[in-house]
Image 1 (spheres, protein in one colour):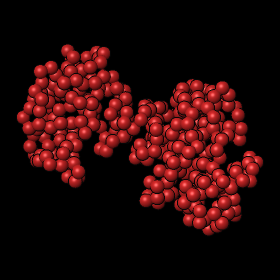
Image 2 (cartoon, rainbow, N blue to C red):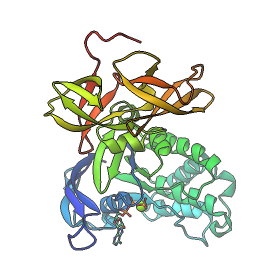
Image 3 (spheres, protein in one colour):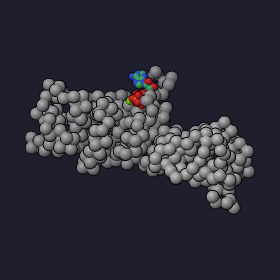
Image 4 (tube, protein in one colour):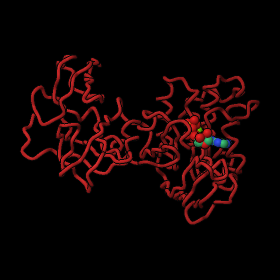
Length: 362
Ligand SMILES: Nc1ncnc2c1ncn2[C@@H]1O[C@H](COP(=O)(O)OP(=O)(O)OP(=O)(O)O)[C@@H](O)[C@H]1O
Ligand SMILES: [Mg+2]
């Protein structure tokens, strides 16, 4: 097993007029568990199918370690792929379905049995092994499909395309943790496609965020949360997502409307930028300029915390604050963004915001 390297790989379904996947260079490191996260239509399945060979990229080359596989068909790539909906032999028993990928590659009988039983135990299929697959409900059939993808010990990678869509929500969480367990056991490279941030963050060592056919950032869940490199990552990850406010930089200061909200850090020519700050890092004080004065429009009491909604210069702003705080709609307060606040230009991070010198701490 080895790294999977994409070199300038891109795909167009319409002869180059639009790119479902813009040419990118990227390495999937051997043995890591990745989530490929992005909204519908951003190119996740396209990228996965290019790795497995179901789709031949319009441009670029693909390497599995030292071996170039760009023109190698799926069967020669040794990839296990699990799709959104069950793919299995309905007339075969669950046991035979799980055993099929191994028998097909002439594994010794004892090893087939041992692998099938390990996977079946982990996925909770032990009491189903003798049943005909056609008789299972769609959720169970999908778990068998998942098992078929995980049963082979020697694959170059396991690619999972929204594999838990048809699974009951209560069972999803269990299956995800089983998947992690199997990953620890086999050490396969896993790429798990999802458009659900919770699924991505709870599953992966590394989350790769795809937008409009482009990887906009990759990192650990903490990195994506604490240090978004693209406005989209700020919106898509986090609940609620990052606040974005139009601003200007001048003389090293960041201005939102007339308010100075901090010092600009980074090489920034004067001009428009966006300030991005997650609700978790907005602090509110009653009377403490500098800071952005905003009118509180509503408070959501969430039990463990409050979400304070506010409006400043026609822009909405949310702060996540302690549940024992008492802010009232209709009042004004000062909103401070000196921690983990960033500057974005054309959606891409170009700097950050530091506290003003000598600023009074709230
Ligand atoms: N066979 C095809 N022919 C033409 N266009 C396609 C084809 N498959 C996908 N596309 C287009 O390519 C883009 C990327 O599609 P893709 O299926 O890779 O997205 P996705 O991220 O997997 O979306 P979803 O979350 O809905 O599965 C979309 O604009 C889609 O409409
Ligand atoms: Mg898809």
